[in-house]
Amino acid sequence: MFVFIWLIVSLPTGNGALQWKIPCQQEGYCVSFNEDEIRAEAGLCAVIPCSFTSFFVPEHIIWYKCEKLEDNCAKSVPVFHSDKNEENIQPGFKGRVSLLHLNMTEKNCSMVINDLQKSDSGSYQLRVVGKETGEAFAYLAKTKLSLVDLNQKPSVMIPPLTEGQQASLTCTAPGLCSGSPPKITWMWRGEGENDSYIIGNITALKTENLTAFTKRHVSTLTFNASTDHHNTSITCKVSFTGDININETVTLNVTYARKPQISGRTTVMEGDNLNLTCSVDSVPPSVITWTKSRKQAEQQSYNVSKNCGSSKICQRQKRSCLFSVTNVTTEDAGLYICTAKHLNNTQRETITVTVTYARKPQISGRTTVMEGDNLNLTCSVDSVPPSVITWTKSRKQAEQQSHNVSKNCGSSKICQRQKRSCLFSVTNVTTEDAGLYICTSKHLNNTQREKITVTVTYARKPQISGRTTVMEGDNLNLTCSVDSVPPSVIKWTKSGIEIKWQDNILSKAESRKVYLLEKSGCVSFSFMNVTSEEAGRYICTATYQNESMTEEVHVKVTSYHEKHCVSGFGALPWVIAGVSLSVHVFCMIYIWHLWNTRKKTNLTEDQTYLSLQKRDTSAEYDVIVQRPQ
Image 1 (tube, helix red, strand yellow):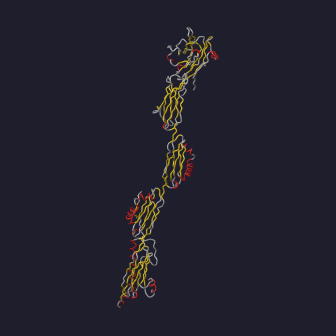
Image 2 (cartoon, rainbow, N blue to C red):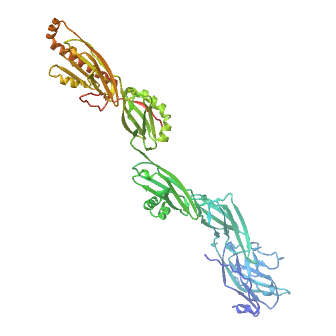
Image 3 (cartoon, rainbow, N blue to C red):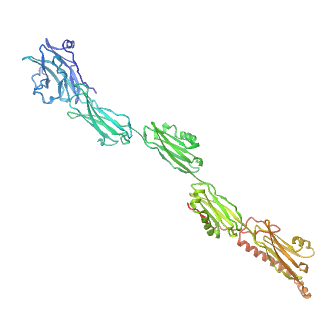
């Protein structure tokens, strides 16, 4: 591209002009052009520098355009005449041609042609007319004007653009001509769109007069920059006379920064992986860093650098930064902060990471309570989110216990969320409250259980059974039964003898047949062939923990007639067998009765007493309390 705009502010005259290589047609009449050929662009303007000499004082200057290569074209219609009253001017040149200097005495014949057209190309000849009649001279030397297409583009100036701030773009038309002002139009084009006019913005056209013959045409576009303008094209179109157009297109870069966006699962199971991505849409790219509140900040920042590489790589390649933790623990839960630094501004976005986990249920409270006291069992589960905790009791008591738990625990939501535990309470405990209790915790899709056995301790008054009136020679069978948990220590004494009957029995084992049966919860003894010595007051003493309870019975021995004794003595073996069988059957029935009324575990049998045991192996459990979420 080349542009030739000749601006002649002052040209040498008189003797100074003779310093040029001036072709003289005859002595005293010479004309000088700066160059033989002047090149210019269509739509702009051209200055033809010119100076001359003459013996007469010039009054008017006339320029002709030579259509052919004739030597003298001064007889054609001129393109310019310094006499404003002259109307014989070629129509296509009217108003487009002027002299740089109107002072004829300086003999400056420089001419300016504005709004150049391709048809303006050709040779131009000068003719000077003096004041007196007949004073005129046509200079045969000519200058040539050559026109090319307009190549000089507008100059578009773009200041730094920031989102939300007002910006002004300027477009300066090419050339510094004083002809018709060009039309300047702003066009906007988004990606993949056609040109469109910018709506809702302000444009202003200004013409700056540099000299008498030079002007600068500037258009200003004022608008509020937004991200919609980023990476879009803005075009300044300049239209000159003669449907000559030239465009300049530039791409807008708007500085902006969006709020950081964090993506990734914020709730992870213990042992899984945590992946958080912080993305920031900004121009230029922001510097992104991850931190964790409090003590973990330094360690987490190191992890980010390790996983994300340098922030520059993260920022420029993906405009995001990945923070990753493998095999998550509860220590990884907490507040994470993504910080985006953009130029002089800093933005932060926070997110809370929750690590879900569930520990094994823990049951606290006394599992052995006295009858009539209160039973308080608490099931605690350390978990995130809180587990749904339910209490169940095996078999028949479930429905009743469920009601009690709901009553004592209040709404399950309060129990669960405030204390992460549920209290099961029973007031005025009875033997029916003994048994196996199960705490069940449901956490997401997992279920855990913890069991505990509740023992209710109690002691009933001793009960003595057996015939207290026997005939001499018959058998005496007495049983002392004590219902208690744990089992009581039972001993038989006879009034006046403060020793165990066991010792008495053993001391008389050689002379009499004495049978002693000891079971858990009862002690039975049998005297064979009773005599009057066995009559008297018998005392059953039950020692339960640190307390003792007694029950007594008076045994009366009556006499037999001789024949009854003889006949009865023959049946003695059968009587002994019947008595022994009766005692065993009675104890077995009593034990079976205790077995079915309560369950007692972990009790052992010794020589003095046996505990009654009840084991429930049913797989059926009834819910007694449940705490909804």
